[in-house]
Length: 491
Ligand code: ZN
Image 1: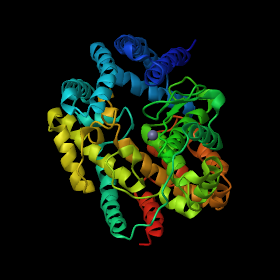
Image 2: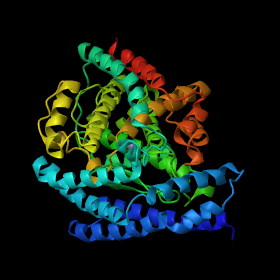
Image 3: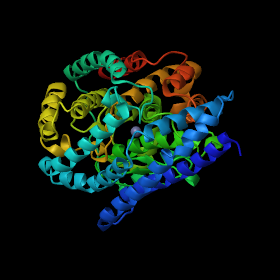
Image 4: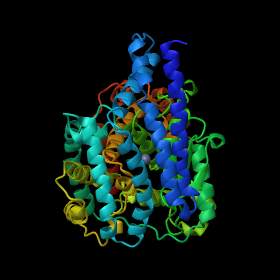
């Protein structure tokens, strides 16, 4: 075989093993017996050692040196991504890779216990250990450059904190102004909700998933503490959760995860089990999930259809008409929890985490001081005191599993979603008419063709620019939010 053929075959097995590691993670969140966590940490560390050895295998360097620059753009993209992965892997000592896998696996249970007990102090030693390991990893990756930017590359290739600060800086003042105007405006009277049968919530969630193109023959929906999506290609799974008093948590978190899962399912099958057979970046991924959840799922047109479906299933538990329902779904409220935040507050949650995690990685903020720093920042941004750590810095799993540099991809995703939605609306003038019939099909087809089928063959910014015809910026998202919420709150 040629050097390129050998390299791609080797990478294919690495990608297959990576899928297995992901499925072990899925199992840990859904099925694994509680007493298995110590053994699972060892299993994950062993698998990570194998993966790390493969990603840094010296033969990759030899193959890359033998291959001439291909003219075919897909072959060139394979080489670009394999080179990126190889250059990253050889900088990380094997001991560090395995130690990170072991510590972050064991930390998940400890974080969940600390959150349940509202005991941040109990989690400080483990989180300090994780931050120290991530700082070591960042220093190894960054060499002379910025440690935080080095971590960011794992989730958003090509991004830098400086560039994000500029985009987020454009977003923040207009979000803060819009939020202030809404909270000052007269608040609409909203219907009082009853209780919603949890099995019926799951049935409607599954119906919504299928309406939005999720192929259950290549996927499945389970319940877990946290909604998430996992896997690529022919096995893409999601989780959801139910609350009898709040059916929207289940429905909209399902819609969000379906956005991630459909993206993975729609990648060109020819790219399956290759380094390109997945989403282009976490930011692009989040743009798809947020579009499904918000721009499409929380639109007035789609809400009118969903209102009918909910009345059919839940009857008197949901009083009021379709317009009341639309207002309820889009209510602006400065709550403590990021995953329950409205479209305005969501980005303020993320910007705060972006600043705090940069301080942790820079060594400017000690883990022991994180709780206090969090609460102080939250009070100043949201005007609300955090009553306990489970509603504050213990609410998100990310840092306990070593995800530093991940949070900003949520806002990058929202910005990309704003850009994509503006272009999509131009191309599909009858979008609202279709959504009002419960048919997101034309929008799904547009997203599949412009974004999803390409997998990671194009770099994130270039992909968004090609899909929308303009460089990504905060402007389309701000215009969308200002128009939508000015109308909702009569500003
Ligand atoms: Zn997401």
